[in-house]
Length: 456
Image (cartoon, rainbow, N blue to C red; front, side):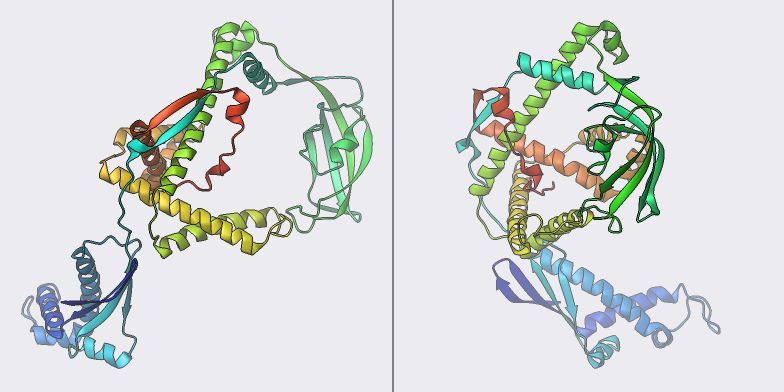
């Protein structure tokens, strides 16, 4: 095997690999010798078929297998010997000249092909002991505690039928039939449908049309579907709904009592208040952690500058862009409607892709250099936590992840990232600053758009 480097520019590499015809013929001969003991050909005893006869019968098909295996093995070996890590699967280009291919298949010409790839950049990690961060922390105060209690109560609001006109926040149970230009439309009719007035669950004008209605009343509501409504045949259309009001029920908020606490699996009212406060504190601690983590990632990006593999960035951009445009399509919106242009958004998401790739490479290098690993026990716990999010389907969730290596890798990635973040935090100087709940929570986490994509 002869290997010649034909391109070495930045992170781009291209190799020309030549495998001599004699070497290929030797591999073909070995395969045919092996085949001799396995095939049965009329007129020959088992294992006694002449290799030359096998070459005439199976030579080209076996040579095709030899070429495929040779290309795979030789390209892998050539890259391994260079002590370089490809950022993506290498691209292999063989000749497209049919006459040349025939010559190779007939053992009359050397096999020559090129391997193109980008390598992962080599860079030095920053000295994390020089990092210094301010960590904002907050304690649950009385106002926040009351808000948390109110949320728990409102999440369990009950409704009680009333003999009065419907008001804001009432639940109105209705049957309705919708039509456009006198014709009923798909999805425009239902029975025993609960509508919470003011919740904005229906198209504009519908809930307002129910305000003041009484049980047993029949009425007609005229309203219009929004121009950006996701169902194209309904978007912007005027509709008429024939409605029968079956019940008007007023919200009834429960109170913190021992009985209410027991219904939630807590021993008494005081204990429930404690549990609520503990969970609120956990939420605040999570916000504090997220703020610190974002500052840390910003610092990692700032202190690590190196060339990025173009293909990694392109792949990351394509994934982000595809998800974003898919969401826009589902919402039936456009760049113009969002007050921007495709060019501006492409630039924005290209920068996000570059940040993700850069941070992913840094996080991976920190983990590799410091031998940070995710244990099987940690993965198992993450699996259990994921399955618990789907009550009644836990077994199916576990089976899905166990049978899908890619999904399992995606589960491991954030665990690895958090372990690396913990390591850097431990190495850094952290100054805690106590602030109000409002100051701590006034934080835009950018929906993890710029989170790194790292792996062990």
